[in-house]
Length: 419
Ligand code: NOJ
Image 1 (tube, rainbow, N blue to C red):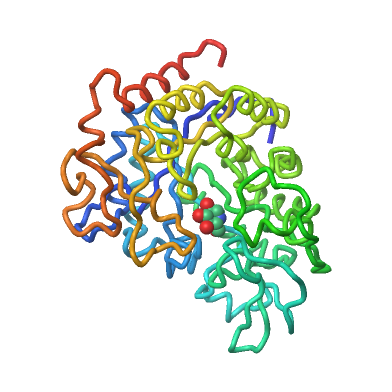
Image 2: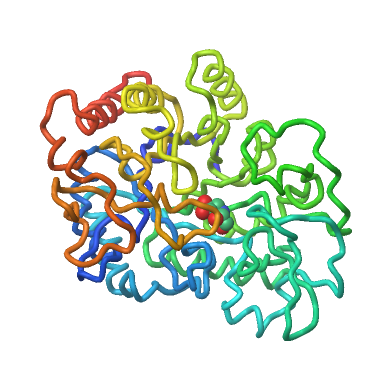
C-alpha cells in the first residue's frame, strides 16, 4: 500500500446499514438484501460514497450476527448469494462502493470449525487466568463435550479464534478472498484488539486509572494488558492485508487513539473511538481531533449499532451541530443509518434480543410517516420508534430538516477545494 497515493476512501462518507433494520422486501418483518438494493437511491440522493453492511452471514444471533456460523454465505432471512451479487452490481452501477463486516476475532460456537477444528481456538484444562469477557463474566467457559475450557472475549457463544495458528490466518484469508472475488470493495474489521493476546495467558492486573473509553462494569475493573492488543498484532494484520490486496480495510480497534499505530501499519484506517464518546464541547473535541490527526488515517463516527443514538445523547439541536462538525472533519467519516433523519433510540424488545442492552439503537429505519414506517408490510422484528414524527419522506425537500442538512453537508464536503 502506498500511503501517499490518493484513495477513494480518503475523504469518503460511508453509510452504515444495519441489514435487519433497513428495508424488508418480503414482508417477514426483517430487513434484507433485496430491501437494501431497493433503497440505494436514498444513499445516492444523500451523496455518500459507500455503504458498510453489518454482518449478513448465517448466525444463531447470540450477538445479532457478530457470531458468524458461516463466513461465506448469506443468512437465509436476509436473502441469498444471488441477492448479494445483485446488490453489489447495482451499488457499483450507481457509483457506490460496498463494504462488508469482517469478524475475525471469534466465530459462533455453532460454526463447524468449533468441532471440526478445535485447534483453531484457545483451550485450557482449567480457567488459567482472571480474564473477563467484554459483556461481563469470565472469559473462559467449560465445554461440556470435551471437559475443557475455551476462551471468549465476548459472549460465551463466541469462542475466540487463535490467530497464532497459521491455518486460522489462511482460512480467514480465504474468507476475505471469497468476498473480494464477488466484488466487495473493502471491510470493516471487527474487534481487532482481540486478535492477539498474551501467549503466556498471564492475569490482567486491576485497573488503576479510568479507561478513556466506556467499558462494561466487569471489564473495566481490569487493565487489559494481557487479554488484548498483543504487540505482535502485525502477524494477524499482515495476513489480512495480503488477502485483501487493495481493498479498503478499516479497523474497529476499541482502544484509545494513541494505541492505533501498530494497527495502521497494515490497515487503511481505524476508528478513533474517543470522538464517539467525547462530550460535545470545543475543548474535548479539539483534543480528540488533534490526537486523531497526529495518528493519521483515523476514521470518524459519532454513532453506530453499539451505542445510544446521536440524537438521544445530544438532543435534536446539538445532534445537528454534531453532524456539521463530523462532516467537516478530514479523513473517512461514517454515518449510522437513521442519524440523517435524527432518529432517536427506541424502546428495545422484551425479552431483549441483545443481552448487553443494544436493541434500542437498532430499531428499523423510518422511510414513510406511517405506523410501519415503510420498513415492512409485516410484523417488524423490532417495533418502529416514531415514524410519524420522523421519516425520510417527511423531511425530503423540507428546508431546515435534518435530512436536508446532511445532504447539504455531504455536498459541501465533496466540493471543498481543500480536499
Ligand atoms: C463490535 C461490534 O460492533 C459489536 O456489535 C459486537 O458485539 C462485538 N464487536 C463482538 O463482535
